[in-house]
Image 1 (cartoon, rainbow, N blue to C red):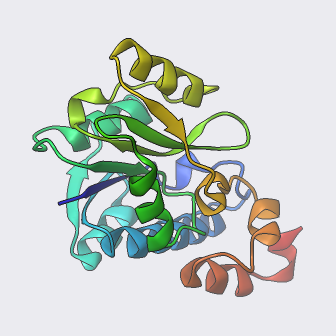
Image 2 (cartoon, rainbow, N blue to C red):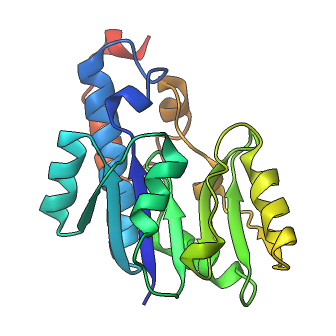
Length: 202
């Protein structure tokens, strides 16, 4: 059984997305919903969040909810990984709304036996990770995190590969990102973007 972990920081985790909190909330939740849909087609899903709206969305989707202990994305993922039995694990950010089930399966297929695979964003951060077991993870997120995840795998004697999967490489930080990717966005994000008033797109 594959377990997919999705950390969701909530509206405050996307301050560059839009100046208006309500718009950030709607877009963040739409993106989370699209990532959730892709993940549910692949395996069991755990959403880790302290955001009430994100938690409600996770419960409505019927997935396991884990409380965010605070301390950033790394600590959140560690909390979600606690107690997992060894087995294939995907950790997927909530801001990759172009992701399809096929992309997540492709990341799994690219994973070397016992090793890791990652989807590296254009800025060198990490949008998705495929791990053989929870104890391979370390909280290494942030600037140039992809290089740090590869280096950690090397210290553990594990092979690490970067998977060139455009729908996982492209994350969303700004309205401009959403507009650029609009034809590839999941249905919730597309609808949310289409329903924004014109002034919100400036």
